[in-house]
Length: 455
Ligand SMILES: *Cc1c(COP(=O)(O)O)cnc(C)c1O
Image (cartoon, rainbow, N blue to C red; front, side, top):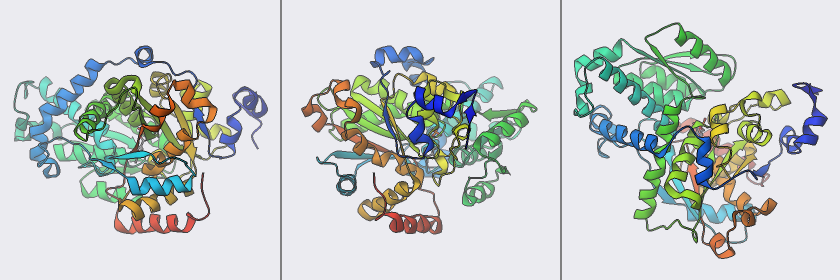
């Protein structure tokens, strides 16, 4: 048993921060952040603006014709990498039953699990940063003007340039997949540093794309650190830093305007009488943080973002709750950071994201791995939708919100009518690329645990 952490006894930690006790016990925790303020104010914490997101969006538009040429997966979509928005009513009914939710909800699901090229939410941030870097290089070497048709980048001159440059990243899997596959396809010399919890099939797949995979016995933090050090020694190498990259963050943020257009098209209103609650699985924080930023820019105070983490990797909850952010790792408190949700197996949150979003994210909750598997199984049974465990973290969120603990609804100033008319959206972050045998094993686990777990 731990006696003290950073000079404070565990008893003192718990006195000062009572939720540390259930967190350390691995219990499912829900916390609504009392420090949340209106968007107009919360934006002050973020060193980025709507103009930066518009710039990212414009860059993706410039690249679209090129992407449509080099990635057959997005040819039909005109080179725009985007996922479907669907209703999951059958799943909603099952989950309401499971968690004893009294009123039926309007439940939507964002299928980032099936984003082209990478099969996960990382197709947003990861590919965007690769493109950003490619553009900078091509501009600097006089091979490109901003007004050019970007298909010029598929020509030998640009490909030669990319071949002489390296891109490296540290990853638990999906970021490595999105950056590895896309950077290698553009022609970059690409290395992915992977932690022990990364799945074997992801390593195999990357290698089949010509990516160098370096494996580590340690966790995500170690893989990143080693990758970063290697890259620093090599000026031709660009290291993509998941914990601190504002480029990555902006790639994710473009999701806000994209979702807004999809909701409008589906005839779904988001306004004071129809708030939108969005549940985002959180690892290091860049993905959900960037998306939440984009959502706040798109919907203002009518959107409410909630982050979800495994009980053994509650790093963002802990960081924001204590205000100590990346100064703390879950392992400091004897929490294992061992979870089947490999996309969320992060022990130390991004300090950049935690600080930037600390007055903007309404709440955080944790759920055990068994519950991820149970939800995975229900998702298959009801919607025939294949997701990976990480992607289910958000699926329990509406039950936590509707439980109205800690006076959440009243704190938001929402009427009962607005509460009843709310839409809830699960951001399903990955799974489209999971091989059939892996997925069958996930389903079998889900089927086994489903009667035993809940809540
Ligand atoms: C990476 C990932 C997340 C979380 O993104 P972070 O930027 O690490 O917070 C969620 N789900 C899946 C499937 C992921 O791969």
